[in-house]
Length: 265
Image (cartoon, rainbow, N blue to C red; front, top):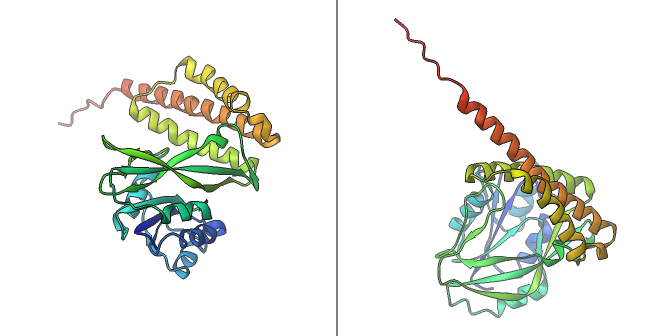
């Protein structure tokens, strides 16, 4: 095995977690699970597979991933979600690395699935992320959603062979549900960051996102799934700024509420 710890965050992931862990065991002898008090068999599955399991309260995606990083055995971290499975080619690529430069981070291609169908085109077909890094230099941002890695200056990046297979959604219903959930979280994040809704973000940006995913990136080549994904991309973009607009209005109303100036004698 190589000196890499795999860190996985979970919440009721019993259905797919076993496959994720099985693939991770081809890479390392240290798999850390940060579980948000699952009510299904997630914890039992992870423990039975020899993972180190820690149940922690939910403090956002970035914060909970950082909790796992701190508990890892090794400084090199491969960060995974429970619905992500490293393929054999990626495992072999990882075993060939020297891992002697903490300033290096490794970018990995993602193969995303809609149900059992591999999505080859559109925005999903171009997906890749930095997921292997050294914790002495790199941590996750503390964002509740769409967390990013905080990369210091003089960081070098290398693309690895192989891929992580992301079983993102089972069907259209789940895709819609996730779009709604992430849109709400994104709106809260944007409000905190001082980002404004605006006419362009509300009406032009969603259309542009649909055109880019379905036409420019060739999403139409994925058939009906490509169309569904492009529509959900449009919906998610619009919902983010729709919710942000509502939060902005609510925030402005609170600012106009006069404080209670009554004085007791």
